[in-house]
Amino acid sequence: AQTVTQSQPEMSVQEAETVTLSCTYDTSESDYYLFWYKQPPSRQMILVIRQEAYKQQNATENRFSVNFQKAAKSFSLKISDSQLGDAAMYFCAYRGGSQGNLIFGKGTKLSVKP
Amino acid sequence: DAGVIQSPRHEVTEMGQEVTLRCKPISGHNSLFWYRQTMMRGLELLIYFNNNVPIDDSGMPEDRFSAKMPNASFSTLKIQPSEPRDSAVYFCASSLGRLNTEAFFGQGTRLTVV
Picture (cartoon, each protein chain N blue to C red):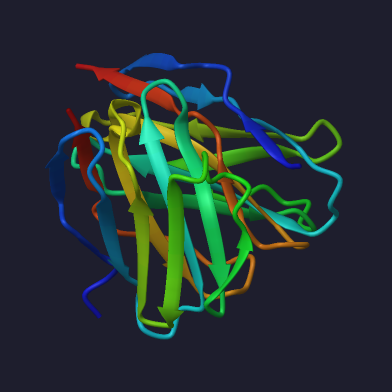
């Protein structure tokens, strides 16, 4: 079975600084996608960024980028120029080809200090 | 489209009572997921439907939990009998069947069993 591990329950960053959230996963599949979702206090789940396993190039969305290391099964999220509105729970997620189910890590709570 | 609609938003019930949570996915989506979120266990996948058929129900905690999807526009998650340890936020999400597509989440149902 696939698993997703986020080893940092909480992280803190100063406004305008850069922070990296870690995620590792375990799978035997070759066809899969990885996602980062953000959950602010409103409880709404918001997609931040996605990465296809077949693509070597790391995905980027404005201030958000990933470091995808397929061999190491690592998928970290980098947030540049952190803003107060980035404070939220961040979840790493895996969606695989054999079944198509979407599995999440336990999340990292990010605080942004002014 | 109004997005994924869950009802009720909040539910307080007494131990031993039956609880039914409802979900209306986004029209045209053929994948539906039920999740349970707690501080201790994060976001757990309970069950995944594709084209109204349960594909993976390995996350369903025990026989007290059951889920149905009678048609493409409606799903239910039932707990009978409910227990205090079932208290959590329950999310429903839907997506198109392709791996790279975003899963859209409802606002969740906060269940409290006293």
